[in-house]
Image (cartoon, rainbow, N blue to C red; front, side, top):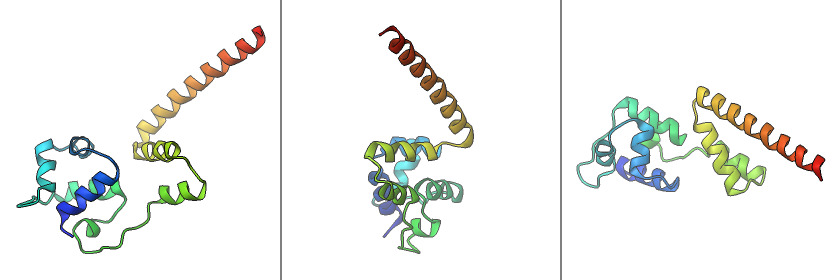
Length: 128
């Protein structure tokens, strides 16, 4: 399979647009579109290939068509084993896509919001 076909297959499997991928990879939309073009596609730079491989949890060799075996996504295994709903699986996928700083910010906001909800619920229970 050619790299342009592989990129399109991976992107559509995650229900992402070309615009989404250009933002994730920090490249222009036109650059990303060239990667997926049917004829005369452009091969991404090594740095971008590595970002793509990391994002999809595949090897650069897989992207380049040198290795057709796809490693099973650990999130898919966990979701199956723990019988996650689609929402839980999407939440986990989103969470692990964050860098360390984003995860910390996310957890701090989540913790703050949970404390607020718990306080309001306790107050409502006392009033009833």
